[in-house]
Image (cartoon, rainbow, N blue to C red; front, side):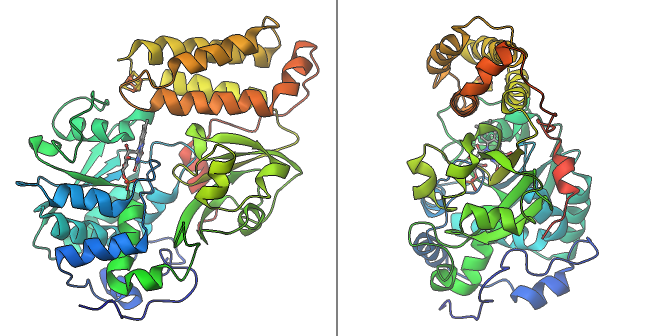
Length: 424
Ligand SMILES: Cc1cc2nc3c(=O)[nH]c(=O)nc-3n(C[C@H](O)[C@H](O)[C@H](O)COP(=O)(O)O)c2cc1C
Ligand code: SF4
């Protein structure tokens, strides 16, 4: 097969076909928008995904073709798992896809199953994602597939979306990360090689399979091709999920969300595992890995939180790190005790009651905690804290002298607060 079918040029791509009334797209309407599910040989699909440069959108940014190949090369492949956990509180993109455009994600999962030789697809979603569950169940019953598709719900929690936690839960254990290796691609669901991907990754794959890598690369940069779903929230006029091309200026991202609702002091890029940046510095960057990496940051699962000048970055950060510490799965000492101590210290800095050397002590702890957990939870949490202590350093002194007049900005956010915003 040649990937010559005509794809839509420009944006939206993934979000083409969103029903204006907020309902889930029907299979017939989905087929009208994107065309039928293509028949692609396994090696052809993997090669085309490789050429497209598609990388995982669940936060780890891993090349998708390499993961497909790692599973396809094994015997007795178990399942393709769609990791729809979306445990990042500020993210709403996966729920948007699963609740409004479920067929695009299922297309990607079915195509990936064909490519790696799996006979089963499991979509795992949080049990509170009611819209996604209903839409998925409807979508599964409308399709006639050679692979079985099951929708599994789970209680959730921040670390419940980590891939080994997902596999552990589907194997009948608690929703907690396990010590890896073996990684899921080696031994995952029911002990068999398993492919686990984020819903957006699979939705992108479904488009690459239809329209090819050349079409995919019409948008974005050479290093970061294609488009991405970004949840933009905080001090913007129209919080919501937006599809934007890689390479778009951060200032244009904010403009897409209606622009700032007040002068901004900082942006949190990448969600709660992300990095605070002064607004003036952040808006000069593009939505591109090379730009973000140059300032020590990643896009994570595609979250951008704008902090207005009326809010206090230190107080917001204290609440987020307290939340992250409470989300530790309680299995690894440095994560459990280290994050709790860091959270208490950042809380004391925010309340203006910390020792003058407390900031240095926190920075020593963050370096001691990094890399010391079974999963990357502590790594993401300390990255967040280090950026907070850098960007809001001047506020620490102001707080010690009782000069903080800021209004709460509401972090940590409940996911629903974002999902209720405008979804485009
Ligand atoms: C603490 C933690 C939480 C995570 N939560 C999610 C999640 O909710 N959804 C998700 O797709 N990936 C999550 N991930 C990343 C997954 O482990 C995994 O990399 C991802 O699902 C793979 O899909 P991708 O390659 O398509 O991104 C999390 C990772 C960590 C360390
Ligand atoms: S590092 Fe933390 S979240 Fe990850 S498994 Fe260990 S205790 Fe759980």
